[in-house]
Image 1 (cartoon, rainbow, N blue to C red):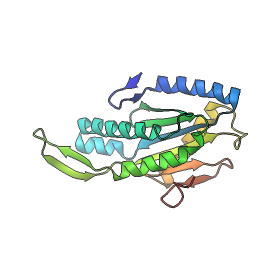
Image 2 (cartoon, helix red, strand yellow):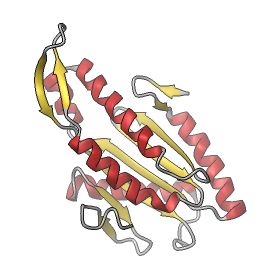
Image 3 (tube, one colour):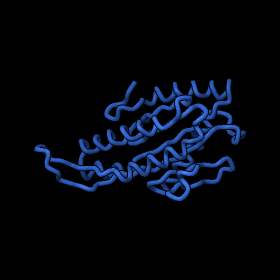
Length: 193
């Protein structure tokens, strides 16, 4: 079930995906990763440019997160979805799930560099060089996180990392490490994880 206007999975589909991933984790020990993110200052953007442009922003983010989903290898299942409003998730289950920090760091950079144009009804550019940013929180469930046993705990960890990103590292991704410390991803360390 796809979520309009983004074209990504609905929250109900994300829930089903995570239940299946949990089964694979319990049966085979396949790692699971969750990245939660939202669009920075989305309400201000909507208030300034209107809800039709806000919907275009949601479509742009949806298109880019689907491309990020496709960065995982064929042995790893991944799903991009929207919880509602400007809140999204990318989830992965399988051998390549540990690549989530790298994938999300790249996604944050691509979104930040995207040039959003606003056009009038004749197609003339009214506003140029507008940029969207997202803040993201990433958590991974694997053999390095024995104190995390459930999808709910993994989700909570990702949510804590998102909260940290929104308050300490806006427009970037934050990973919560197995020792519960936060790692803010940037150009120096984000692609090497």
